[in-house]
Amino acid sequence: MAEQPFPETALLAQVLAADSTEAPSLRTTRRGSQPPARGTEDGKPPPLLSRRNSILSRRSSFGMVPGSRRPSIGPWMFHRRVSFSGLPIFQPILKARLENTYRMGPDKGCKFDAERVQHVLEGTLACALGTTVYSPQGSAPLAQSLTELLQNQAKEVVPSRYKLVCHVVLGQQGQQSLVVASRGLWNPETDSFASATFSNASLFAVATVYGVYFE
Image (cartoon, rainbow, N blue to C red):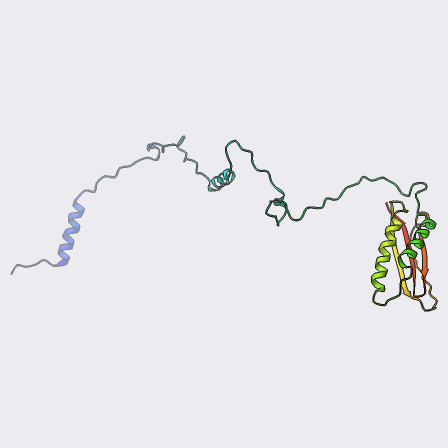
């Protein structure tokens, strides 16, 4: 039988054989020796396209026909709810801005005329109530409607720069005594009030309108 070498001896022989062989020489290259990339200037990398810009360009060109105008921004940009026709459901309310008149008081002959307003109140109460019968359930809406009616009638004879406050007391006629009093803070030179009463066999009413000058 032939003798086989030990594994350690075979491994040592392989290492010695590897050292005796010469390693191939590596090629050394410089960074600047390679030619610049295609499509670049002075070795700079080509600019990268932004994805955001491309998306914006697609959105701006979406639905556009060459030679057509750009659609204007409609009122739906300022409202959340839009009808099928494209118009907003709630139209904005624009307040009219007026210039300052620098007036500290009413013009001559344009003050609150208490006597004239009193005649208007007396005539309106007589026409509105007449032979009306007092009702506990209907007294509240009746007093409210009288207040609106008297205020609208007084506006027709009062200058436009006055604000009116109307107060109506309505009660059942029972041969009782009643005193209606009021108190306020105003300018006695420009502000005033007018009062009128009405009564029949069933009810009584006391109406008072205050006129306060406002600038």
